[in-house]
Length: 89
Image (cartoon, rainbow, N blue to C red; front, side):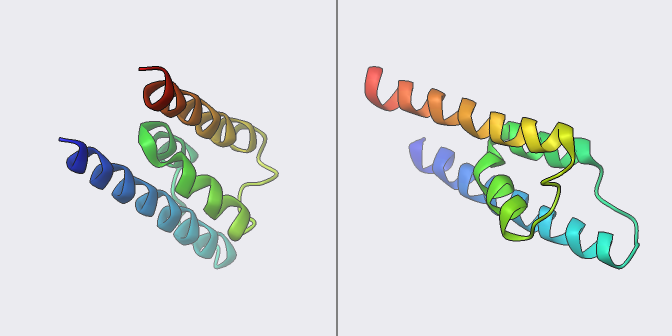
């Protein structure tokens, strides 16, 4: 069961990272964009690390107020939850 969970986390973080990269490329080319809601939900459901890494790696959405606050907030929340599960339980 743990392996499945770790695989899920790995995949959702890869998806989050790639999604931010695709959205950045589409923004540069003035094409259809990935909705911010989709990017946030990817982060919320476990992809916060990949999404935040991509945000700073691609310099994308760092000035967009909702996402520049919510994405690191999700990462912080996930870190606290993981710390609780690993060290307290």
